[in-house]
Length: 165
Image 1 (tube, rainbow, N blue to C red):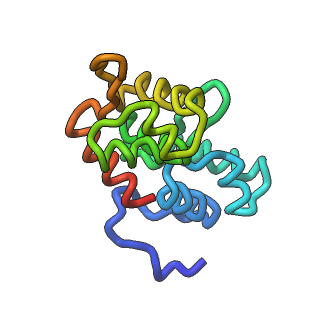
Image 2 (image 1 turned 90 degrees about the vertical axis):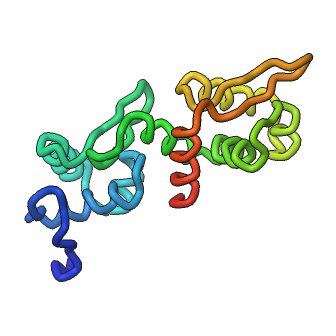
């Protein structure tokens, strides 16, 4: 890899090991990347990739968000709220839901199912996930529930994340 392209304004000292440099840049360019995506992208073996990820985490350059079924990798400057939004946007259905909410302000389950061409149960699953993470909330008016982004800070983070994805 050509070392001339390295930015001088990094918050951490230069990464000397080329494999760690490649892994760090992949995580920086694709926040929320999963292990197998990272392995495929870098072409490294399981052991080598695991070793360098562990070193990067110990050095404080990356953070790993682990859940029951998967781990996602982020640079250390990404907080929990941003990580939740990024993870949701990596799902096409969640991304579509958030894009419609941004466009219309509030939406119903019926409108989402019709526009995204998905079953209501699928949409409801993703809505429940977004609600559990505190990204959106619903307000019942009559027989419909209108979903909207919880607050302005989250709304701005979603806009930024959608623009970069």
